[in-house]
Length: 466
Image 1: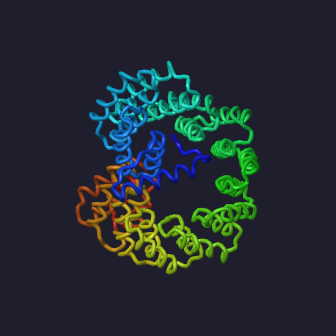
Image 2 (image 1 turned 180 degrees about the horizontal axis):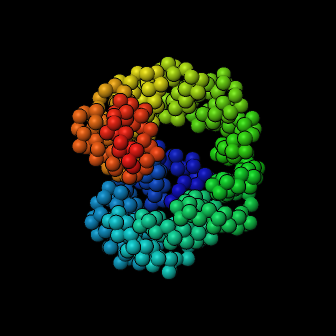
Image 3 (image 1 turned 135 degrees about the vertical axis):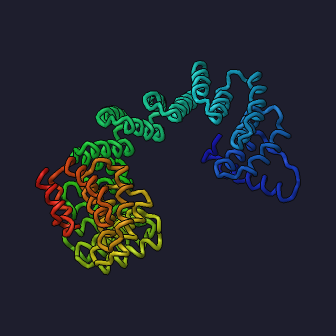
């Protein structure tokens, strides 16, 4: 039971009275409704200990109250005391076999035990006899959540749609319907559903917003723009609609108009790092470098943990050819988050540009260590190791790379050259033959990285023969 706005003063009085009682240890009387409101308030605010005290005192004063017993069961379930909760619930069922809340709590216990199909069966049983127009949509929503726990997005979607049929204003269910459509890659079906929903709810800003995102997904930017405009008409304080409209305008290369939308979103709410970053990107597209970098700085000031902000600054200076400054900022980023794989790759690339090869090699190794296994990372790492004469490390690196790219000519030519470098001719010829079999057009790798080896007569004879 939730507090009614009309009873707010009485509820506040009840809360003050209850908390005063706890401080003085004087036992005061509350009617059962007061206890229900007090408990609901504490549960909503995460004050479980106080909720438990209210339940205990409430049941002492009203031992037959079904709602207070249900709160007791809910708290026990929350604390994972499932056997105890179920025992109380079974006793309550004998008295209240047609109480939907009993079934909901039973389903909650089953769900916590990962018995989701049984939980669904219990909730469906509640639907069979329920006539409460307020609780029916909640039950459909709970069924939908149980299906989501089982990754059954088709049936989950159906349940959330039924929830909306009983309560069109349940925006949580609306979001969940769209989530299911998205997971099933059903953008067109989602668009059809949202348009049908909007026929009955034409001023629902949430639906217009979601419709715009669906059109954006299928790159129908003009329809997306119209949908976001309708979301703003429905609610001109809807920050998300302004942001999404800005993203669409960027796609349409209307950068000044996009900036206006991002600025509007920040006027309605506190500035966000995302909006500041997008404004910076727009100014960079407009070749206004001063305002671009200014907004990138604001982005990382607003949220130092946003990697896209640091990456934007670093890339900005790289494009200007100012690699020293780019290195300064990527180092700042690494000081904040030393396990960010994108930072390490940029760090390696910039050091390579500056001919700081030892640092570049270290950067590429960190990039691989943190899970970037792209082909160019393996090859760039190997090339830097070759350049500083770390041939054994380069061989180790490329042998690892072959586990991910077992038939790659670029890797195999490099291994051939490296084995010749370390005087292991047998493996050198073995890899050279494999490389030729894979792709003869990559023989230039030997010329570029191992020119002395490439000019050997034995190597030239193999190349000419093949």
